[in-house]
Image: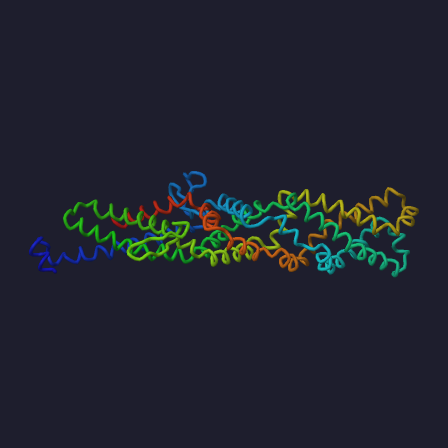
Length: 415
């Protein structure tokens, strides 16, 4: 072959390797730019470099870069939650699975630990002389009375929580807050769900790059202008990313292709619907939609006032029933006004202390809500079009950035 090229086209045999290596170099450029473009999609989590000039919510600054997904963490998390609540879960239906009586039972150890302290300290504060005068058996009876009233208190309270869950729990705010505070969480969802597809993007970069390299070699053989290599580096970087992304998400529905033999083709990501559903459900429920996170959001989120109003109403009823037996004695000793203040104090302390023992309910709540199985089953049951609509739109608008990044990196290598 060397003799043919040197004889017919006047190619120096010593320079022949430059042409033969071009497809391989182009393949490595395709692989390298795709690999680096994917890394730049997820990292760094925070802006790297002096943030002198930067457009809001854009990864690129004048001197620096932040991963595309971490840059859009708030927007992507919000969009993902909206799509999830539209197509996968109904928050009220999920919380309706809680059985108040069972919730009360698992909370009993926590209530025992706080009611003894609350009753003793409140009585010593408001009616110290009467409380000290009472025999230990009577004091213990007051605590036992509290424990007898607790199941009814928690049962009726949880009935209201289930009924008004949308008024006391903001799921979207919780997810966005967690993903912004820990941007790796959102990365984890995409990296685990799309692990095979991202590997395909990297590897396909070499094969597509090799094919483009053959074209590059042919053109450069006849036309050796200095701009050919950078131009093809740019084309390879853009084209390999573009083609790979198209193959991953298109076609949405299985499509028959006939080339002598008919076969069905569908986007690689969509063909893995069952596997992706299991991963998406597991990662979300283990890292974001945990029982602890949900209770924390209820207790400290933007709708916490509604929750505490609900809790206060039930706590006052609980306190009234609890102190009812002592009312004649206490009123006679300190007056009705002080008795009313004492009830308010017990209610206030119960509201303050109850969140500290809510962890007793975590195991039961996780099992009852069954979020992982709910999300997984619903996601597996989606049509291909709806399944694509759960994850793809979250970062679809930023695909162009990923493609351009590949092109710019390819241009740099070509230069």
